Image (cartoon, rainbow, N blue to C red):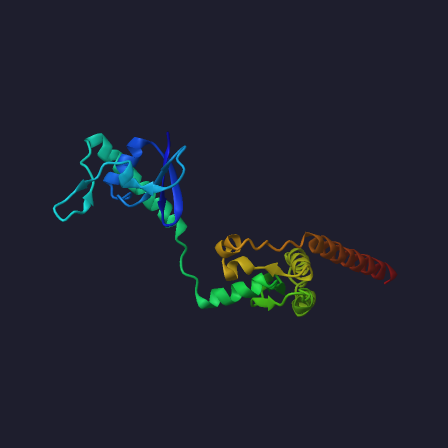
Length: 227
């Protein structure tokens, strides 16, 4: 039957009797460690079911193990340390905690993409990270960057005509959500904060930008024919 023990307030196991002996020999399980076996009504000290020797001072010590059991004990120590390391989270700075509280309240951190073209060179840039309060429109803060792309993005040949629409779509869809990079993806997962999805906004922005481009091309063609 399987054995279990309590470490750091968490239930560990299941383990066989030989594995428990190895845990005892490695010092992971002491005589006072609560243990329980399948079918038992509750937790009891390990000394109730496993053998511990006592030194001259009356302190419980473990019995010596064979070479094979010692190897098992070594593997058990490594596994125990790995599990223990996974349960310890790194300290969170006060700045990250403050940002996390804003995100938990519904805020997001975003940046906006824009393009600048210089004849044969087209540069794609991102704005500084901006905090968007809960309930605030994410599109309005990006309009100045969309205007920059509209005025300066098209003049690069040939990439201005490719990168500028992409930048406009991203910006008019609400910008790039960088909350995970600012707060930390680990904290978002730990506190079960959902990622922001703006698929619908991207579709609408894409249709709008493509429609404007098609209208502009149509106007240019008609204008050239008239001339």
